[in-house]
Image 1 (cartoon, rainbow, N blue to C red):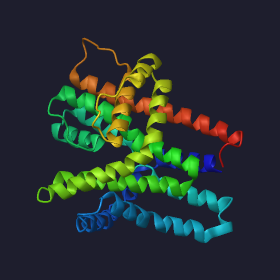
Image 2 (cartoon, helix red, strand yellow; image 1 turned 90 degrees about the vertical axis):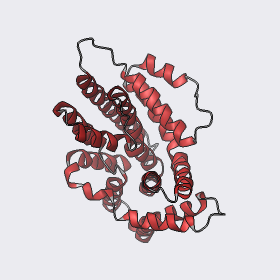
Image 3 (spheres, rainbow, N blue to C red; image 1 turned 60 degrees about the vertical axis):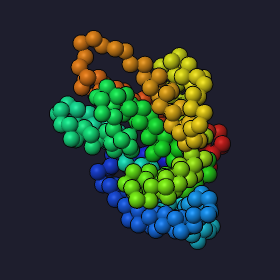
Length: 303
């Protein structure tokens, strides 16, 4: 049943992305911000504890619906619920759609739109140099594919809809914490403390999917280069668990692309080619995951 729900959810998500902008759930930002204010009121507590409570509060409504349905949650009822939860768990933005917007901005040479599209993909500051921006966007596509898609699929298949939504909650908290830390200049120390805790919480749930996704990039792309990058020792000893996962995904994903230098290619053309190649790598891996999950379902390894 999970396979059917997953396939239906992915098809709807791919074909009707223009109708699902409301799934970004901006209204949750107020609840999350209120939770952050409570964290700041407990300076002597580890920020991770109140953030974990905040995550539980956001997960509870979905958990209440699931448990209230009880024995009726099977067959068609389960399928409908699973598809709905999956649609809200994936994203909140479609990485393929953002890549297309970025490429259109590059081709139009609209610098303001390029910066906006690149920032949306990177979810952070955009490098000033165009060459660095091109490389950073390619890395970010490989990272965000795990954050927005593959980690959700992993938890959905392993533990069901509630686990997928729980992962999305930690990602929403992380994204809001990063945004708040970049905007809050007065309470910089408190905002940074919350950001670190939010990234740690999210990093725990993203750790296993990130490594499966990195291994998948080696399968979906150029294996030799990707495997070499996968085996390369991590250089950032002081990096957090979340940063380790992101660096791994970026390193292996870009290596799997194995883009060759073209002497007659402009920087704009290189940027478009790289972003589209990264997006195609993600799509190929998605197909591979679908085949694997289908095989597991046929052999009774998943629900």
